Image (cartoon, rainbow, N blue to C red):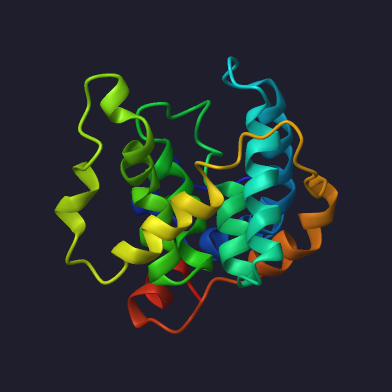
Length: 193
């Protein structure tokens, strides 16, 4: 395989960076496949619940689908816990970072903060503050985050719920991740949209 000429980025040529851009664009196209693989691995993540973490996110996405949510919100529900294995202390932020270029600011914010908002349902049982989410009470996306956790997270641990299979969501995931949003100039500069 061809290699660039430099050993320090400051020494790279236009031809080097053009070549790397081609490779990176090919690499980015593989993201949906990589995400599906990571989701499938959730089958073996975080035991103790009545269902696997994969079934949890499938229930979340299926509920969002049946509720008539946008494709972005359905895929956010599908990916909201994808960071559990690699970022157990910051899984919300990891999932939000993956979604950031492809979803609205509102959905990004909801996923980024869903871990804190989800604490409402359990923190008081383990010495935590179930109302920690209230520090965001005046935020414009607060109600959406409350609704997301109530409808697509806290209630998605049911072993009798019939979720759509992961393969069902593949075309939607491919579509959402087909191109970064370009409505925001900062996002255009950040993601090259």
